[in-house]
Length: 487
Image (cartoon, rainbow, N blue to C red; front, top):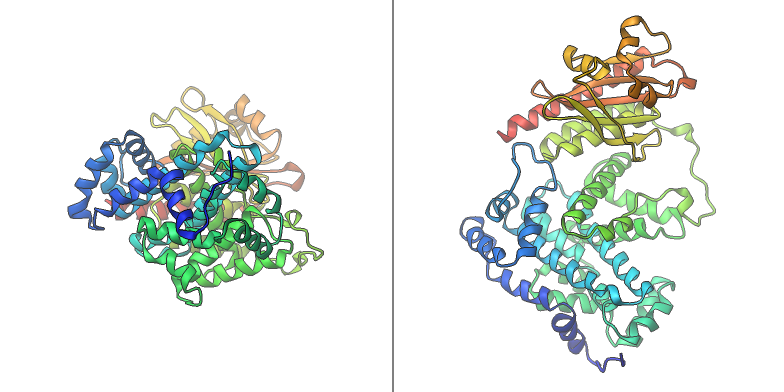
């Protein structure tokens, strides 16, 4: 199409709001009518959402996207709004409309459409990271921080959806350093992307936090720091800077803000990424999942410096203590079973360096176990498919379930242990050594934590068994505490 004849900032803001994202503009106006008062507004909001089938489905899916202890399956919009709260529901509606409005641009050129997906995923992840940084804040403030961080780059993301030769022209400059790129954008458009984001936020009346983060960046309140750091961290994870020191500096700042150590922060970032992937599926935006990258490693940086040697690596005991402290802290900050499970698995992986560390979920009828999560000895999540019947055969899992005790397979195997190694378990182990223990909530087994140790590294030692048992017992205790708190 011919180039747009837009000259002023107001013209750009109006065009994006009315022509590119009209559904979002309409939704923002609708949500503005409802006060942030769950008692009076939730029923009205529920009725309003019911008129939009796509939003209704999205809200219900998001409500079911995380395992909340004590919350049964959500099947109605009214129940979903009660479970989530009004501010979260509002943000779900806005996020859904942004995603729908921008993913419709699939007909654009491949490079431009990939740019849209990259920026959308980065923005969504920034919002989730912002919430991660303030677990002590109430839900409403967390949601405000999510929205401010998620919309921080909405101006640029929306711009790329314009079917105009301007975006093809700007595509030539996306590899420039940030300041040069921003200057080129302003030359071509007559407005910066920051100004466009602020203008849209004002147009949609989406709160003051995003506007303040641009208009008064000198404010160093914790909220301003969260928005800035979440945006930067998401950007650096997506596109690592040229120097690893820049990335590590952001990690240090976030860890200091949260008052946790950097290792624990990396746990939190990985868990946030997993939750974000699940949420994107609920939003029907699976095309964005590949853009949510894990924390970059040294190979992702074009740096000349090398990492410090492992001579100063933390001891096994200190890592073990940190995992226990982290699980204990989650009893206050989380009700997500998956977060507890993955924290324990990553702790075992880092403490014991088993080749594979996984959680096998026990079916409701206690007839089958199947793998839900697995981490390797580098504490990297991996795809691992395993399922076995425990009802028809007396195997290690049935024995662990009946005895409520760990089962260990080392080099020397007595007849009792040999009888517990069925063909599918033998194939899974490939001759390696193995330990498993039940995961229970109030003495009710929900699955098994398993560790597989490479046989070349020797038997699973008594000390390793002790650490494994201690971490699983801590997991069971924390899950039971949270379950009782939710009742």
